[in-house]
Image 1 (cartoon, rainbow, N blue to C red):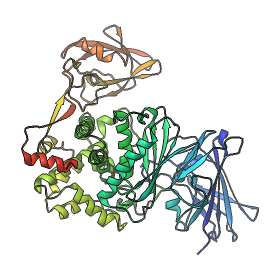
Image 2: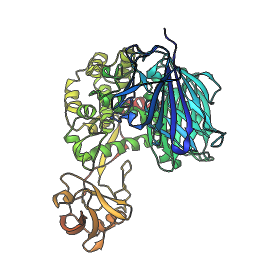
Image 3: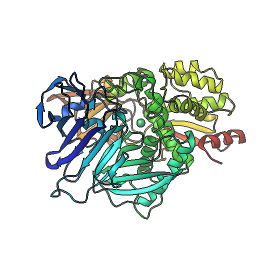
Image 4: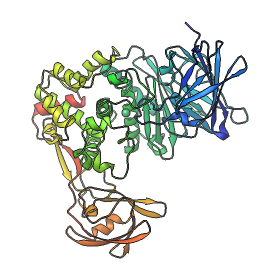
Amino acid sequence: MPAPHQYRISASDPTAHLFEISLTVAEPDPAGQVFIIPAWIPGSYMIRDLARHVVAIRAAMDGEDVKLTKLDKSSWQADPCEAPLTVVAEIHAFDLNVRGAYLDTTHGFFDGACVFPEVVGQEDLECHLEIIPPPDTIATDWRVATSMRPLSAERYDFGTYVASNYAELIDHPVEMGNIHIGEFEAAGIPHAIAVFGEMHFDMARICHDLAKLCEHQLGFLGKPENLDRYLFLLTVRENGYGGLEHRWSSSLMCSRKDLPRRGRTKVDDDYRKFLGLCSHEYFHLWNVKRMKPERFTPYVLGAETYTGLLWVFEGITSYYDDLFLCRAGLISDKSYLELLAQTITRVERTRGRFRQTVEESSFDAWTRFYKQDASSSNSIVSYYTKGSLIALALDLTIRKESKDKFSLDDVMKECWKRYGETGKGMPERGLESLARSVTGLELVDFFDRFVRGTGDLPLHGLLKTVGIDMRFRPAVDSKDMGGKPANDEAEPPPWLGATLTRQGSLNCFTLVHSGSPAEKAGIAPGDEAVAMDGLRLTAENLDSRLRDHHEGDAVTITVFRDHNLMRRRVTLAAPAEDTCYLVIDTDADAAVESGRKRWLGRP
Ligand SMILES: [Zn+2]
């Protein structure tokens, strides 16, 4: 067995945002070693061509230069050589997001896929990674947070870490900087959260709540065999949101306001969103990181890998993320139903749900979901939101048809046994056939209509079976995301069907809903709003301008399109009843109530 690959990453030049990488291969391919940098990152289904961030690369053997030939956009080949071969690269790192690489004088972060070349043909070899701090003139208080196993590094310090192969090396993102660390245990497993960018929050409360959440999830599908530690890596920004799952960690980004302040105990909407994000990424440690589509076993990171199953791995995860908050006792039933109604609202407002199935949405994620434009809401559906509602409908259908003998939980447990614990990978129709064999129910029609078809889910009837009344009302203003009944004074404005967004000093139409009065009148995304009936029109006053009118009224909207002033005569329509809220039916019989309690995990 050749010696492990020796990787080194140095935060050598923070002001230029450059990481220096070196990689020594003990026994390079005698025909000429090929190195490749991934085109995409597991969990984020878009071609990113990460090699474009390599600003310089060279190879050497025994101090002598070795010629490196670029083969294509992502790979290089060294001339044949026998002794250990070292490749040194400078990587530009100025992309601050959960799936990027970033370095400045305050901190550094990287996802391994962005920075580490793969040694083609020797992917299975152990990798050692030495992480080197920035110069003392930049920082002396930096620490390191990663779920990678230390080899000769103190906890949270620079030094050498080890990964059993390349796939694992790039599955341990690393944060370095003045980080704030909280530790807790869940089901006997050490967990930690490392926070960069904010100090003034209640770390003890976060640890307490995450412990409850993780403990609950560990009890759901059971502790994965190799899960001996877990780390939440969190970057806090003034405005930010996002997450990327890994097997032993997750990279998260949130807004300052999402973290709980000391001395407060309420779970407000922002903190609930943060907990939902943690719940989502944590559940991925089962659902997609260990149990994954057959087509991802193994990941081939050079080009698109197509699967119609992303709705299973993202949609079902999105269904359980909020449900776990409820079942773990972190939020109330009412709060959970509010979140659910907001998801129903989002899907209800997406006309693209009649154009694209979730299976197609999964398959085409690379070019459509991840490359959205102003019209996407009219032409595609999200495999996250619609996928989560399919999971809800499937769960309630199984509960109803099996007379509460089975639920989606049982299907997921069996999936985990069959595809997660074995590492086999789920075939394209795997969930469907397993759901049938676990429950004994005929579900072909369900999958035909809602997964392979664009049918609207029968949520009204299904929610009734657990004593929940699904109601719709018009939006009271353009910020109305649903989830709550309207207050009595709120007068819904008539329907224009276009979103107006402030862009610097301009107000531009961003989304124009298909079939809406705005579309029929010829307003297009990108049009700069000027006035409605001679009065200035802005993102802030659109609702009140519309409230001056009723459905059926014709108004004149003037816009600039490419510096041409255009007048559009728009006939406003009745407001769409597209805003959902859910109400617990207090008159439901005892059997229905106990069904709801079982679903929401109440005693
Ligand atoms: Zn996800």
